[in-house]
Length: 235
Length: 245
Image 1 (spheres, chains in turn blue, cyan):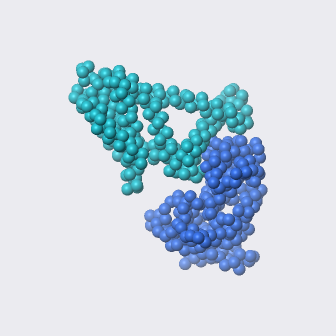
Image 2 (cartoon, one colour):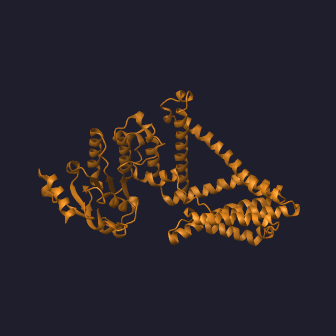
Image 3 (cartoon, chains in turn yellow, orange):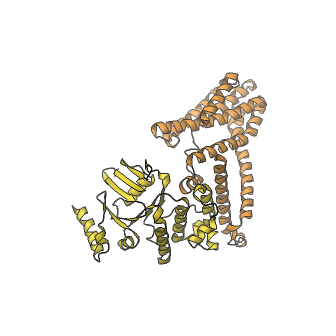
């Protein structure tokens, strides 16, 4: 399975944010999307998830059997600030989510099995989401993907404000999930991108560019990426 | 499928309502201390809270619909029209235009609410199933809660029970027709009319003028012959069928 972007464009008034993006993402990999503030990472994610419409271009989902436009229903999107129903308990939310998406859930899997997977305690399961920490809300969002299994998963800076333990758990989950998904992970933390992602993609001047594998393991990786971003920005 | 959707929608709504109630109950001085911290896990308690809330809501709806019909149609006509022979015609004039044009002011389909967001955006519920099932249920509840008030008001003003029933059916039909019209306009132009303040203000003024000006002039439109004519009733059912499609 592949996600192919063809000449995706988006402008806000006179500002061209996405300037004809052509790129192909492969299943089984976590892509780290890196760009400066305002480069258009969230705009790209919003276009792919159907939150906003691109001005031009298309996103196609290619499988062995068919090629079809990317349906927003098949995209899982974790916003940097998780949005969840505050006045449901975590348990209720996941139980209802399973009810709605039961076609994707094995018959023997119950809500508690999923909570065990992300190590949310019995007491916490029955607390209102309103009282959950940022990390717990992120785990709940991760559970939604684990249950509904969308082919494309977009993560907009999800680990930025998490403590090290939760961040590690979520990284472990993402690594376990990647075989069956195309995962795009936007971040401005280079170390996180190199640590978690299989590929690094720069979003600069409204276009995507894959970073050469040979520099990813390089001790001067950070300097090289920064110089790439600066060069293209100043060109 | 639609039944499952509706059941889940109800369960979500009931849970949210019960949790909101318990959350604020916990914050009350003295009483709040009696509510223990594991209360949200108590399914049977929450079910009971939802049932009680549902009963109160039904009573409130019955009362508010009776107030709407009683004040705006019955009392207004009684105060304005002293000629008893014109009162029923005046009542029909007010009732018809208030509801016929009034239905085209707001749209439940395009209304943004918390439950819609939770079910469609966060839980990925099928949007079509959600909208159709909740709309039909909303119309059914409206019909049932309007019916006693409309029957009473119609008989009180000089009509028959059968005529009251026709008026109540007309109310639901007009509401569904308005929803279908909002959808048609949106699919053709991308415009949500019920969110356009100029449109809403114009329709509101038109609604009030058509309902009350003829009555204030003591020349209500003689709608009785039209509204209860078999051809009109047939058209009403055809309209209902088209709206549901």
